[in-house]
Amino acid sequence: MDEKKVREAIEALKYINLKSVHPFYDWEEMMEVRDTAIEALEKQLAKKPEMRTAYNDFVGRLICYKGFCPSCGGVVESYRNESCHHCTQVLDWSE
Image (cartoon, rainbow, N blue to C red; front, side):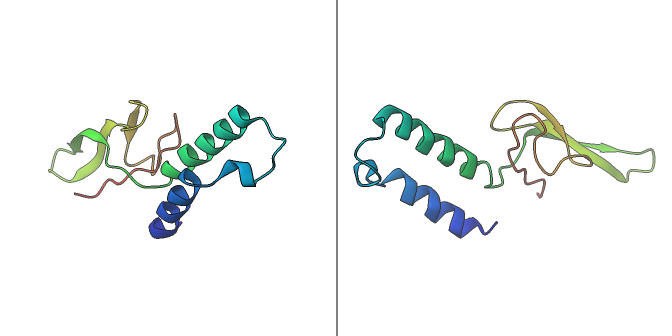
């Protein structure tokens, strides 16, 4: 997904007038749906893993990185995951 479009969608959802959607919907339910949509979109924006550690073989070649997901704190590995398998947060393993 294009990062700019995702950020624009998040901002649009934050400021949408829920009363204009339908006057008979339950407001709390609509707010919960909106917040869930924002949370899902935010997970599409790549975040760097916390406490990233490099693992090398005996000759010094990089095998993988290991770290913690910035959203849920789950352990993630670069050779297996471009996103967290616990919460689906997209991860950015670059320096």
